[in-house]
Image (cartoon, rainbow, N blue to C red):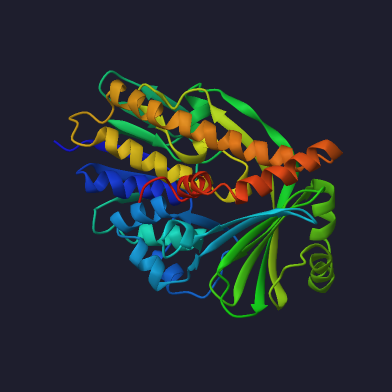
Length: 387
């Protein structure tokens, strides 16, 4: 008899979990309040402002799940270099040639990744149920788990919470989180560039917060601007022409002229679930951990969750077995916490204007850029560790 898996949330990570477990022979149902039409997104020309930096580990997983060929046939931008620097200081440059790779990763719109995964659902008989209501209870039983809505209920052997940082399933199950809101927010600005395809993504650390350039498939790119919420709210109120002038005052390394297409502001938070599972409920992606998006690692951590969970459940008779779910948490908690701490160290370390710390940062960047074998190992870790 097939294991029955219920997944709440059909975003990138939830959809990847669905395909991974369906490939293993599970009967998978996704509950989603906003189902998408994959073919319309993959064949459309509407560009998503939300972009992810897919590393080589995630690329390999998406290849295995059948999604990466569709991404390659749609909009995507391989990047060859990653640079981090502080104005008037040293810089740190990672290059694909340092690890003899064809590229370091891809910058892909989130909806393209999601649609490429949803396109696999029919072949794997993944059922999608639209439910607009919020769940009201999670009921645990010895050999099953039930998810209760105001007018219906679902039963499964395993319930996967892929419903984001404000996970309702996590709250209903009594799993607490530790974390905080960052003082700054983040603005994403989609621009249309008058420049050839760019292959370097960069981040500059400023006293007011980092800025970043993410080259999408030409002619598009995404600008990331960290600042206090009040300032970003002011920028949101500007006309496109006025916002362009503000961008030109802060982004000095843009490769050509540009026009602003769209912008949006996102709050920033770090949080980590106190446990990744309880009974037959398990958390993946942002439901388990949200991270400062400084280096675009959030979805990569989520895809690592999917790979680890799939590995732990492979071949088991009962996908809700506690020992398997605890094994998954053991595999992922340390790695997630390490990446969260590294991003915070960069964020807080480069946001401090104390003169001794500025000198130390400059020295650290110089040493890191000339670290040779150590630098290559850091780059391999950023690319996903194994691919």
